[in-house]
Image (tube, rainbow, N blue to C red; front, side, top):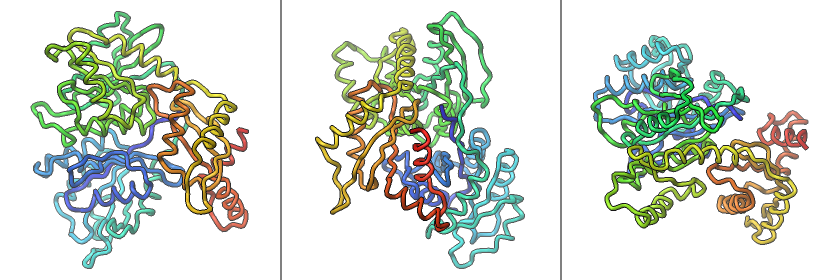
Amino acid sequence: MASKLPTVAIIGQANVGKSSLFNRMVRAQQAIVAREAGTTRDNVLGRVEHDGFQFWLVDTAGMKDPDDEFEASIQEQIEEAAVAADVILVVVDSTMYVSDHDRLVAKKALKSKKPVILVLNKTDLKGSLPSDEFKRLGIKQIVQTSAEHNRGTIGLLDTIVQEIPRRTEAEADDVFRVALIGRPNVGKSNLFNTLAGKQQALVANIAGTTRDVNRVQIKYNQRTIELLDTAGVRRQGKQERGIEKFSVLRTLQAIEEADVCLLLIDVNEIGVALDQRLAGIIAEAGKGLIVVVSKWDSVEGKDAFTRDALAPQISRHLKFVPWAPLIFTSSVTGQNVTKVFDLALDIETRRDQETKTRVLNDLLQKAVQAHPPSGLKNTHPRLRYIVQTDTMPPWFVIHGSNLKFVHWSYKRYLERLIRETYNYAGTPIKFSFIDEKQVKANKQRIAEGKAPVTKAYKKAKQAELED
């Protein structure tokens, strides 16, 4: 099982180009994870890969109310970053002299004891000040960028990956971790308490590594289960809904630690965009997922017909995770609460199952014969063979040629066939494509000293060793 990804947080005052910089780094990798329609800053969280490193990039400004006073807003931003981020990017406008606000940002970021990188943005504009002008902020690492013209982005990524570890194999333990994820006021704390209270064999209350992730370990069917609850993030008295007051950083931390996530949806508020975003984050992180419809006791006149009518509505809303099981619960009456444990443990078993290479390749050949992948003239993708390379989540590697032309819909078609052959309910499955023509060309260029070692080359070499 792989270790959790590092988190890099972008902070700074308004109008310095934080969101533009975020979009450059994320979109360049074709790894946009989260969108929210109807907002000017629709990207808040993205997964970035650079030079063999992977990390989550978070635009903290996207989580704050722009009408807040600066001092309160920036304090919340830095507090989130200091608790959950591994690296902090402080972004300033290089055409503006250092302000008291910039000093406050820099001081609080440095006080966090996390690696801090100062990003001088808008360096392409006339009137851009020399970098020496910003050394008074006390941040040693300084990178100049122009998000508008995509300058300095690679240099910034190079600097970031020097401060984070490569993704390594995590130390295995016997603890099965289940995270409760959801918007404010959807009943996470109530379900957390009910799940913990239902079991009499309480093992331990564990102080969280961060103050806002509550943990408890219980015994269930001879398994040690650790529940992670992200409740308590929002300040008391704050009742705003939506992404502005939702702690993505701490929720992300819980998702990365978990084996299976329970996504709670309020039965009285179905169809909220943030629920879609959270489901996407969980799937992208490769975690097991159960959609838990909470507060079922609050529905008047409910019956099986009501449930059967709501289920398709919820499934349509979360249509990009059709493999996630749906369960209706009530923390008040205890309905279906214990079933959550059984379902989560079933998903763990499915996530760990291994396939037979012969069965997979028979499936692939039949799929190609029935529906050959389309491409361009004389450049049709050829899918030669498939192997499973990992579990939790299940990961499949397809070898062939012209694979860059494989359409996303064809990948979905292959996923559906694999799911029909093996029961992967409750877990995402991942695909990688290794283009053998490209690998061969890279080998030749590497041998001639004309190109660096690429990720595809490394994957191909690993696959050769495994074969």
